[in-house]
Amino acid sequence: QVQLAESGGGSVQAGGSLRLSCAASGYTYSSNCMGWFRRAPGREREGVAAIYTGGSSTIYAASVKGRFTISQDNAKNTVYLQMNSLKPEDTAMYYCAARRLGARCSALIPRYFDYWGQGTQVTVSS
Image (cartoon, rainbow, N blue to C red; front, side, top):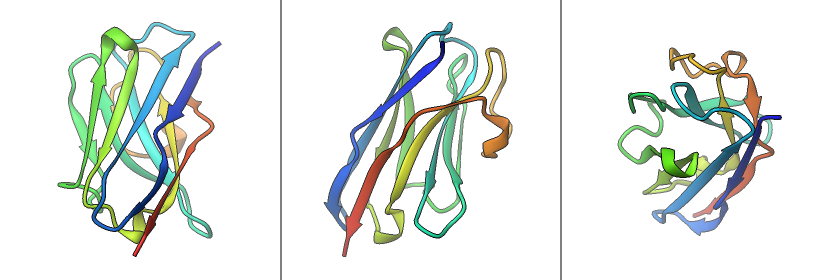
């Protein structure tokens, strides 16, 4: 059974930083796409960033490029999202997601991802 467990959310002031973690279990963590998505109240779920664990290639949403960094620690089966220069509009529930084994990162489209975590809340105050 695939499980994705997010952690690291919290409340910060604008300009601050947070690091989210996503620990994966229940499947062979290698050579697939892992991503972060978010959903703000009243808005659609949107892609934030993704990384291909087999080669570390990454993709980012335009709204976070230059501020957020996705990375991985394959020894720990964990993907991270370092969020710097946070803005109030970054406030959302953040979800970790994974594609099936072998699938690369083609786009930040939720329906492309097969497994989802429960989410961790990020709140940025002005």
